[in-house]
Length: 321
Image (tube, rainbow, N blue to C red; front, side, top):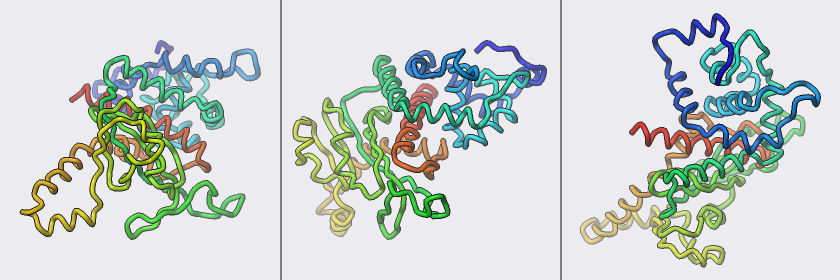
C-alpha cells in the first residue's frame, strides 16, 4: 500500500532486523486476495459525502484482520495502532494523520455482522483456493470443539448469555458455544462450519459439514450412525467413524486377537488428525479460547472471519513447508 511515512515510521521501516510480527504481516500482505475481499464489502461500506468521511476500506479490513490474528478488543486495537509501527504500516496508516478510534473499529465489525459479510468472505477465500487447486473435494473430516463463554451474571440483564448452554465433556462441565467444521482431508482447510450452543450433539450438524462430492468421510465416535440419518442418505461416500473409547479399551485387552482392528483404529485417528489444524490455529495461534461477544450470530461472524484467516494461514504453512 502506498502512503506517506512519518519520520518515525520511515526510521522503523529501515531498521535491519525484522520481528516475527513484521514477517507474519508481510506474508499475509502478499498472500491474501485483498481486492476480492474488498469487492464483497464495498457495496455496503459508507460512501464519502454522507456524514463523517470514512477511512479507506483497505485500512479497515486490514485492521479487522489484525484484530482477529492477535485477539484484540476494539480499544486494544486502537492502542496497538498508535504503539506498534508494524501494525500501523500494515494498515497503511501513519501518525501524521488520523488513526481510527475504537468506535470506528467497532462500527466496521458491526457492519460485517449485520450484513453477514464474514460468511461471504469465507466463501470467497474458499472459492479462490478452489480455483488455485489448493482446496480439493475428495474427502472430508468432521469434528467439533467447545468455545467457553463468560459465566458471570454481572451485566445489564443479570443473567448468563441465553443463547449459550452448558454441556458435560468427560467429567467436566463447560458453558459456551460449539463450532462444528468440515475440513478438506488432504490440506486441513475448512470448507464448511456451523455455530451452535455447546449442548448441541455433533451428529445433528453432520449434514451441514459435507458438500456431497466426497469419496470418504472421517469422524470420531460422536458421529456414529451418521450415514443412517435421512439428511445424509444422498451422500455417496465411505464413512470411517472411530469406535467408542469403551470398545477400544475392550479390544486392547486382547491385543493379539484384535491386532488388525486396533491398527485400523490407529490409522483412522492418524488420518483424522488434520481436522485439528483449524482448531489449533484459531485457539493457539489466534488466541480465540473464550467468546467475547454475546449471542450466536455475533460469534458465528467472528468464527467465519477466524476460519477464513485460518485457511490462509494454513496455505502459508503449506507454502513454507
